[in-house]
Length: 453
Ligand code: PLZ
Image (cartoon, rainbow, N blue to C red; front, top):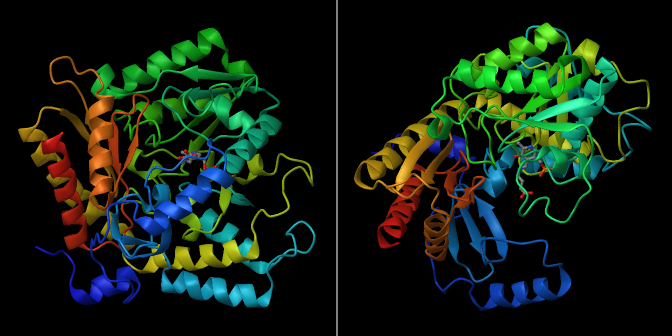
């Protein structure tokens, strides 16, 4: 049964757009996509991979349309970016208007109001009832880099702790923070120094309570680094690339309390979890933690490149004037898009929609799990839900099964993404503009792919 009436559906999808259907008129890739991808192989280095073998020409609602006219169901949102939907009319209009006004002055040269408005919105919307400030950048990795710079300057300390299964980016410092070697780090070192790794809470695999997992991490940090040397710990409230790992209750608050007691900056990396994705504006809210600094990107601007560090004013102000910036950070078109997206997040019922999508995904995947022990775990919040595939006898990660299911679903016109340290997790990150029917059909295809695998 559809959860949405037509008017709500139209409001959330941003009005009539592309036909909302899965339609395969060729095998994937069709001839036009194949020709474009052949040029990609010639012109773009092999290191820049792709998982869906089509060339996109349009997207919106819950579909991506390729160069041959195939229409694929989108359960990935370009890795959790187009949360409000691709080409949302409010965002498209704001971008067009700004592009006609001015495209760039450099905020460090002649500032403009929209950047300041985005900062004000972030200061208001992020958790924490205290004075905050925000600085804008271009990518999630750049936001993470700057959060670490700010924490080091504020504390006068250099060590940073990240967690097992954590993902924070592909630049040199953020590669060091990222846990997984292949494909992110292998051969790309040496990495930035003074980055340490602590054990994560991974309830499905470690069976520990949140407080016990936190005690384990804290003990390791105290013994191996020492609180006096530690500038910050950085953690994703729900790990994204690492496998949609939801820490046990109490884990994050215990870490945050320890940070506060020891003058360590607690950084929540909400690049993937932020902006309604988890059925809350920020995932930190789910766990009752108030980060000192929070990094955001992805969903913030409906597909335009924008990222931010937001946090306690006294920490954010640690840097000398001129210490933070970049040519494009807070580009005016990206800021216009972000203001339109934030309007949608606040006023168009998308947080509720993320919760509905979470209920649909969880119910369906749990029903599948009840019949198929190869699904070891179903977890996540809101429109950020995953299934972890295992060998039912041993619980060992089943990477091959996961890859086969994802590949078969994509061949049938459903974009799904895998993740996880062991590559054995299929994650569902649909745009919140997807309709119930399309979401259900996408899950049918995944279920068929699993049954056949
Ligand atoms: N922090 C929590 O999820 C980006 C990476 C995809 P950028 N995740 C998608 C890939 O394979 O490169 C991410 C994240 C978290 C930081 C980042 C980095 O964000 O905008 O990709 O730099």
